[in-house]
Image (cartoon, helix red, strand yellow):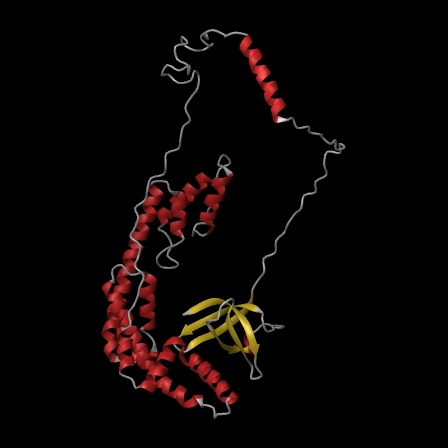
Length: 368
């Protein structure tokens, strides 16, 4: 499966290859062809690479330069009002003196005598209520009208991610000889690439100690003989796990298993043909169910006016490239145009346009 990684070039070799590792990490790492590197590339550069991960290790298929975003910063010059600055002097008063003055003022107020009972304020009923209300609210005022929340949509249960065990793979390891098991464990961790790295490190230590080095050729041939058995065992483990959750498993995991069943190594094993056909039929059934649910949920979102949810949903079909029905497409366009009006707020425009950018109808919407 191809992955996009940021890799760091750790060294270049005279044989036309280079070594790399994931930027900021020790693993994964590997060896690639120097012809993939861009011009003027040097050790320590961080690049964007497409990497194929399998039992044989990590293989770099393409390398490109990471594009740096340019920030256009516009600075505002503060010119000021032109008036000369006048400094202000502040004089603090002693707390004791401030307290005496405050006490004098309070005493002067107390000498004035009481005000007596307050009369009714203008606009109050009788003065009987201090708050001026007699259960009828404010005079001439109207309560704020709150927008009701949008209707809730039906939530589908989240799919179950696949977590396979290692029963068949462990059975293969237990049946191997001790020297074969060591090679098989290295193959599971990193494939042939990991074996080459391990032999190279061991040969470096042997050279320092003055001992003869190891020839990696026979070990690689022996590992290549073990790889088909390990791949079949690994696929059987995933099949056993997916059969238990075949109705709820994530379609991405199910598609991955079906795609791996077409591997040349697995095709040679006739005992896997039955399982392969069952998984293909199960994938077809699950894709049809997911597509039906997608159309139903999309129609429900349009019916209740959840335009943003409908736009987001229309851009994420269970099968890539599946368009909405013609009726739903027309209704989506009409509802979107109704939202993009001069009276709508800027925040509303932003939310709708962000959802519309990835929707299949973005070319059909023309705001009025």
